[in-house]
Image 1 (cartoon, helix red, strand yellow):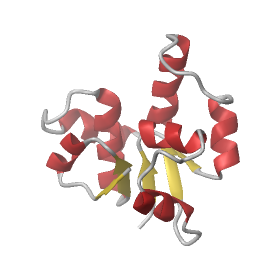
Image 2 (tube, rainbow, N blue to C red):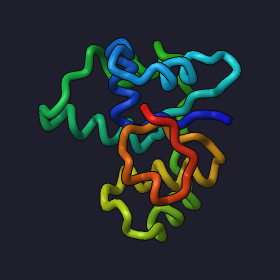
Image 3 (spheres, rainbow, N blue to C red):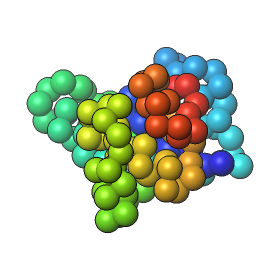
Image 4 (cartoon, helix red, strand yellow):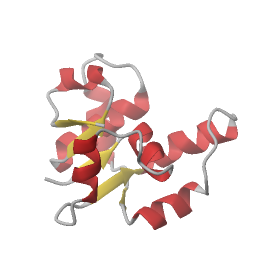
Length: 125
């Protein structure tokens, strides 16, 4: 299955990947898998960078290009599904990632245990 990285996992990868779990690093590095980063993640990182909450080692676009990961756009179906999810989690960015992972049949790489409540495939980041 292909992987969808959550915001924190993508950020850790962009900073060298040392703080990711070994299984996550191995899966992300597996040439047989396609690895995606959602437009929602880019949006969230852009907001956090603008607010001074994070410092990126490079631009987000450059980090995505260097990683070789694929960009996953947000579709109307993704948005409708995210909005209809049960309220296990209130973060709209995480809800979008859950919806995208469900609809695109991807494994969501995350360290957020709350997201398991949605029944989506999870790999601990």
